[in-house]
Image (tube, rainbow, N blue to C red):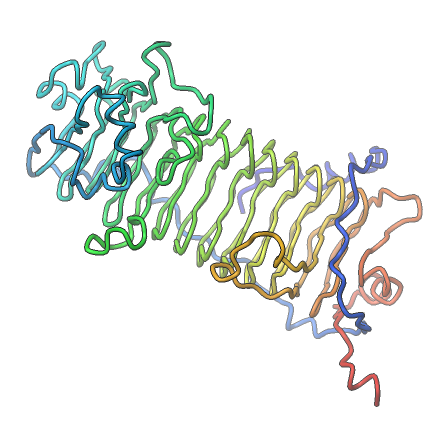
Length: 515
């Protein structure tokens, strides 16, 4: 296990000296549900035993391995063509409004730079085109004044010979990958020519250059700095790996895109990272700082992802790391996520069979780790500290396993579980079906110094507790469980703390109650 947080003995020493935390607000009231009677009983300990998850081997995801993937067999060519009727650009030129954006910026019929047939570098592009389209402004510093499209069966490598690739905001430049793209040991910057500097965020609707990698493509970014990409427009969010827009390009359906983003820095993007219907993406060892909406945001039907060893902080509008809508069978491990506007890590909308392990989420302005409508997930060995609301929050999610987590000094609850009827929230229930049910297992770990309660759970199908340490209560009355557990607190603590037995809390069948 890789340590990335406070040692428990030091934390507990600090807790003993900490005054009770002021509560910003109280946990949301649970939805009105039929009143159930619950029972408390001992559970078999062997059924709760679980070995630590075996983590994926990350040793092969290196810059050297990325460089070894670059094909050198054929030299590519650079051509300029109209943007119209180009499959890789249809998402950005469809309809008069979108086309008008490029006409305005290029002052004529929009064109793009196409890389075809083999390997091309920025120097090759500069050699082939006039400065009005692609200029070398200083040795190894290039300014693209047109969009750049890497065609199928072609490769673009922006490597260490390039000090910086700048994408002109005024002229409407952006990067589209339909083949292979490699960005290594360099910088890629959205560039505001009027300021002679990065196109820093000003307005959600203001065009900023972006990078999108389509279905069937591969994108590799290693040891690089990517700055100020993206705005609030579909597929234009920042750095995106995505299938083509559904139902628009049926003849273009290609394999799920993939890629590695490793040991790099992503700064001031609309979304630091976004993917859609992608597979086996590796996001490892990066820093995501001061991005606007999200730091890392894998989305619909992506799977087999590894999100590991990243540091995510300063996200201005929402969460540090979020996976949403059937992002399944993935790993979120050894990340630090802090000082984000909402939660540190979010598992959302029917994202299942994921392992969230050994992360440290702290000083976020909402929860440390949030699970919404996403069952069958494992949280193991996370440190969730000093968040402004709950440490770990679970809503409408069944079979959540929490093993060996530390949730401490959060302003509300250490672990908060509840159900909620979302039918009046504007949520599309056809896209996002869910059951207002919750169940969880909490084994090992420590809940310490949380502001309102160590655990608050309402209306569960079942809760199992075993070997959970509850320390340094903020209230002078001592440990105070809440929700259903509060109603059965004496029985629970007798089994859990005095007899050191596993505890099962579940509803009594109404038919049994009448017999």
